[in-house]
Image: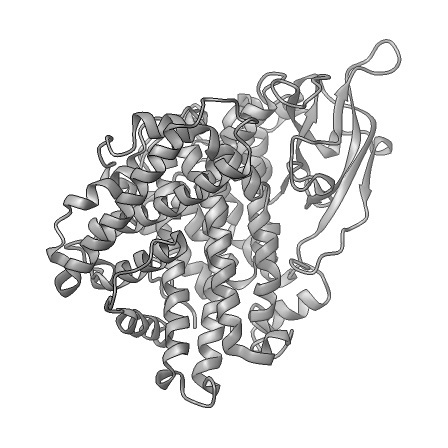
Length: 600
């Protein structure tokens, strides 16, 4: 791969070196980019808008990418969001990246995944381990509007990227370099990407672990065409506008400078990259759930529910307020996880895996509950409310992404024993920057991601809640104190169970018992994130996030999922939450923590 021929013309800093965001990547600039992108997309409900729901549904019906939307993103240079600022792009903070891409996912999850998410995925490996020349080449490719594809996904093996079907071996004849063989049935954008990040086996390690795998960065234009074949597109129920094809390599020679990092570092590199991508991608997907909730509320507002206006149907209001609360829970955990990456916390990989595991569950359940409000309209794929059905089909595909639930839990489980012994209920709460929405962070340093888990500063936020000053909760202070006590008690029980785990290997701890413990741990992390966001919003201009109503509702819902029960006759603050939901719906603003103005 002739990587050295492509150099960036602007002033370079060493890739991954932390630095404070410059004016081009400040919070004000990020907010402006989000607003500009939203404005250019236009009113999604306008049937004459080619970038609206009607145009998206038409492209979905034809199973093709939305051409006008891709042209818009090309013109805006969206790929710069995926490239570190040190290499000429705009990537400084993980939470900002997720926030910008959330605007795209709010319109079309297939567009967000196909245009951006998998270039982000592939790029993470390059920024984490690539040589200077490899990083410059990938950066220039993206900045010029090109695409990267990554081969983590493996359809035949349940999304387990280690059970690969690519091998890098010496040639069968003497002389020449190494050759790549094998095929993968599903690689998003494989037929449209020039840059290929390929995970492949490079040793005969029987169990496929350890140092048996390596990662390559390939320039498809420099691979001999007879040795590379595009496989037929894989038919999908969801994400129909996102090309999912595959690749087959037949004794394909690869350049000697193609390795990302050292040989045998494929697993280590993947886990380091996942510490970034597992939090960023689910955070982006929140945009799709936002549209599903907005569509359900629009339907209920126009047609009522059960023969009554939505405002006079308590169950409908409760369902809508609950879905809104679930989005806030998800965004609180995603915020803490993405900002942990910027703070270079050792536990970032655990938080990212928890986000990757829990958010798809909460979003799936929320959309399922909302579907009841639409009745038989849930099956309609066109018309004013057809966009809801599209998001129902798309969410499971985007949620699976490059690592499913079992893979995420397998990352968390081996850490539980050590965290329980040395951190839970003893560590001090984390930096306030973990929970602030718009405060600047140092530039992402991809080389510091995926380090061993250290202090669990997020769980420490939960433990500190017992002594929390709840006066800001007003009439809900006693209830908040009770809920915090129940959640802290659950953390104590979890600590006892996890401390009893033997410090076994990652594979030995991949079992139903440890998975159940990890599941409960992710819910406690979500509760801690909500408490942290609420606590650090006190005195801010955001009166809704600083008020206790959403927090109480969130903690009640988490307690229910944990089976902890709720206090008898607990006051239900859903009325205040529903009022805020209605305000944002009427004023066209987002249903996440940011309350971002929308086109409509």
